Length: 179
Image (tube, rainbow, N blue to C red):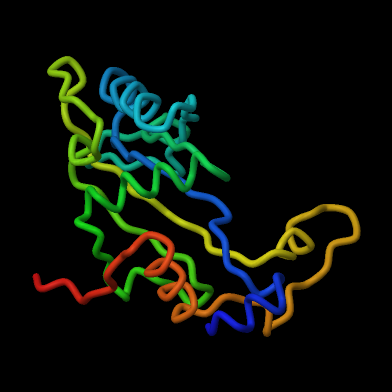
């Protein structure tokens, strides 16, 4: 995506639509309460609980039992959290983390890797997933309920455009992980 196109047409500019932070604990009770406390400290918002879709006897999970928590961040909160989360993964993302619409996701193995977070022995250490939606102005027409429309194919975001946007906005390297 060239900068002269963005300067002439503001509808071609990319932005962060939302950031979803998810902690899948796999059990209800104290572990989920600890995860909710950690997430509230990290994001500054109260997380909502996510329920199990089916019973899994091997993991001792029942259907409709709360097993995870999540928060959706938008605007300035989303960008400031992303800046800290990228530091936790050494400002590197795998290109396979991007989907065909330019959205991407990455995981953080320990929440204490995020700058400004302290270890609390009462809460323990938990990993989390960060899912980022990249969009252009005009995507609202596909999400609204009244007079809904379609987003044209030339208005959708490609993975390459999303990678270039993340590189320039946050200084991220898109590299293949050597594991």
